[in-house]
Structure formats: structure tokens, C-alpha cells
Amino acid sequence: MSLVNSFVNQIGRELGRDAYRSVMYSSAGLKRKPRIDELEAPIFDQVTNFELLESDEDTFRHLTNLVEKAENTDDEDFEWNELFYELDNKIDFCKANLPSEFHEQLEKLDEINANNYQYVKSKHINYVDSVILHFESTASALSQKNLSIATILTVFGLRPSFMGEKFIYTLINMLYIFILGTVCFNGWMTYKYPTLFNGNLPKETPADISLIQTMGQVLIGISIGFYLLYFFMGLRKISEYKQEIQKNIDSKIKFETYKAELLK
Image (cartoon, rainbow, N blue to C red; front, top):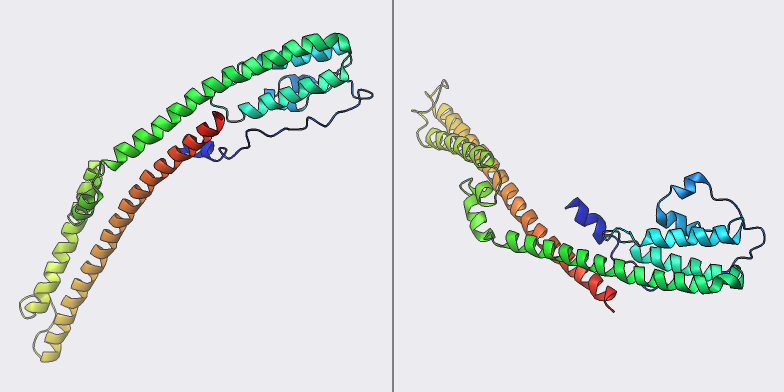
């Protein structure tokens, strides 16, 4: 679920923003050589840091390489659209700063970038469809459990098995309830029959009998208190299970909204 939780955080990105089309730099003083570490950086960083190189031919070749690399953008990358918008901006930047002899080539490069955008977009939409299906299937599978029955089974310690947890947890719960039941039974018998279940306590006077009965009440109270704690912890588990169902439904809706934005 950690994979899916990192995608959802990026869904609110703006799909149609113009990055900095109106910002143009003077070609004077901007021409430089690309550093080796820049050529090995992620493609989005390379595009963002793109500048004019020492020769116009090198600048155009570098831009062409970035456009070719963008075609292989991972369809699971939720920054894919920003990459292509940045490339579009860089192509416009070169149109404004490179000599006119490059304009025809830049127009073709612009068309290639647009086609790559549509290609990656179609792959990304297919991936989003698979994510939506994952959330829908998960929510449907989780919803098959009747949580009212799970609450009833919690009383007997059988909730873990019903909820698909390891059987060892059911055994632990049942053993825990058995121990508490035994303590409660002994407490009740001590309270009800103080002269028979007195242990080593004296039972000669009314005060002695009262003390034995008090000990019985303490045992009853302790066992009931720990059972209630166990029961409410079980209810919390069921509540978390319900929240997991809702989270999958909410995530599915968010991705459906995101897909609808892509298809506009």
C-alpha cells in the first residue's frame, strides 16, 4: 500500500500550466559546455537545466537527445506531463535564440515531442486504469467480510481467523479469554462461597469472610476489565479494517478524477 500512498500525494498536480513560455534569455553570455554530471542526471533535471551550449549545432543536438530520451519516460512516472511541457518550453526557447536555419528542424522536433507526449500519455492512462482496478478489486475483496459477524466473533476470540489473520492469533485470543474466564469463575466462587474458596485466608469471623468476598470481587473486576480491554481492541481492529476499505475507495475515486482530467 506504500506504493499506492506515494502516487496519491501527486494527483493534484496542475495538468495545463504554462511553465515559462514568456521568459526568454539573451543568447549572449549563456553559451557553455555541459558538465558530465549533468549528462548523467535524471532527464527531468537535464531538461530543466537546459541552456545554450558553445555552438548552435551542439545546442540543437542536445535538445534532440532530450526529446528522444523523453519517449522512453516511465509510464508510472507522475511527472511525465511536466517533462513534456518543459521540453515544449525549451523548444520554443531555442526557436527564439537559435539562427533561422534551425527553425525547420525545431518545428519537426516540436512535432516529435507532441507525438511522444501522446504516446506516453496513452501508456500512462493504461497504467492509471490498472491502479484504479487494483483499488477497486482490493476494496471489493475487503468488503466481502461481514463486520457485524466479526464483532460477534470477537466475543469468543475468533475474529482473527474470520478477518483472514494468522490462526495463531485466534489461538492466543481464545487462550487469553479462557484464562480470564477461569479467573472470573474463581472470583465468583470465592465471592459466593467464601468459606470453601478462601485459600489460606482465615475464615473465622465476619470480617474474615468479608475480606475473602472482597478478594473474589477484585478477581471478578480484574477479569472483566481485561476482557473489556481485549474486546475494545478487537473493535479497533475492525474499525481500522473499515478505514482500509474506505481508503481504497477514496483512492480509486481520486485516480478516476485524475484520469478524467487527463482525458479532457
